Image (tube, rainbow, N blue to C red):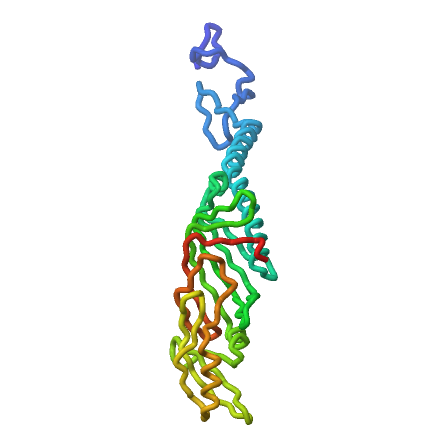
Length: 279
């Protein structure tokens, strides 16, 4: 404050113009929680339209990245369906098997004409054309280098491994005896009905022999009394191995092991062939 020449007091001048409404002025501020600094401009708010544009761009990029995967899965599903249909026709199974084409991308494999790895699991494969048919309860195939003929008449795998499960009820039907797991690994037990209502229990060794056959040898009597006539009957039953006629061409039986529920048979092979017209 200073005194004028007329003796009045007035506010001291600080170099700025005085405005009676200065207290009513509120400068534009930034975010509510940000302090306003004189001489600075508030930071602009992000525009909603820009955010939507960024989100749309990100969604498009994700879709483009997933598109090859989706297309490859469609191609794989089509190949799996056709392979299952051909296998069912060729092997005569009541239902189509489970087929999985492994490896990515499948599109390039299909274009080359060779599928690197194909897994097939089939159930209840019948055994036609055999005097003592032995069905396969389950067959699991691991095929490498699978190709097909141009006319779809056959498919051929460069190499393959397979496991077949043969249930004891099916083995019993093929032998005409009630078969179950034996007292030692590699052996099965069989109950033999003899004349005059006699019954005897024997155990026999199970093994793989040439020609994809299962042999039953070295039987021993473990229960009951076996007359001479009974021994001759068992010789006739066990002297002929049982052939497995429902296995794809090119697979060779390597081993047979006994389990609680049946026999496990292992196969390997090269140039394994499947022919749909064999149904």
